Image 1 (cartoon, one colour):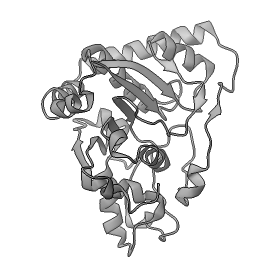
Image 2 (spheres, rainbow, N blue to C red; image 1 turned 120 degrees about the vertical axis):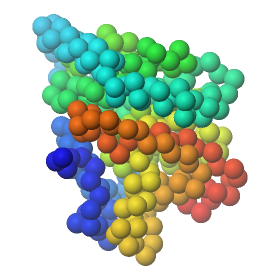
Image 3 (cartoon, rainbow, N blue to C red; image 1 turned 90 degrees about the horizontal axis):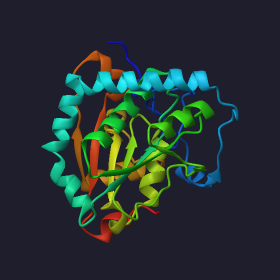
Length: 278
């Protein structure tokens, strides 16, 4: 199987000051994650697609393409296994996050181009199927700066809301929220964790994305003498995170979902969060 996307090897080890993670190529270049402070200086800003024109014929073609993906995946062994895990292994964790609420909103960051690449289509299809099959999933909001006007129109036709603000992953979980972020850059996970680095916010979060355990294993592999600033929150969260890896089942879904996990956060005391400046 060809190595794609997020691969952790010794060749990717860097100094404590520079942390490089090889992540899926989804219409963007690999990015080097530098000092966490510089990443978090990014401010929320208005966003619109770079192309202002839409093409009805392209919209129709892309909509049909997504409908075909959703139908195909919905009947696959992969989705059957994925859905079964939600209904068995992790359902109690979802209920704990929901508490007295009946709906959990979904925020999709970094989906990539559904027009140009297959992995984003597969990932979005899973989100749509979850919305269809689990009545406790509420509104779905989507953002990626690479989205075109055509893609935005199709996402809206599928029932999603395309954000008009680039939050840089800094949404506070003021209510039960699922952050759907498979194969996003490490900086988005860091931004998200840092924005929610309080027990009353972390308990409202569910994260579907890159395995935090894999980040920790990479750190051990590289034999760091100290935790790099650029992934400190990811590693610190490991002590109070329940992580459940998903099964990709077949090569058809490996590129889109390998090393992906469900993460649920339950810090017991504020003191667990204090040793990292937030």
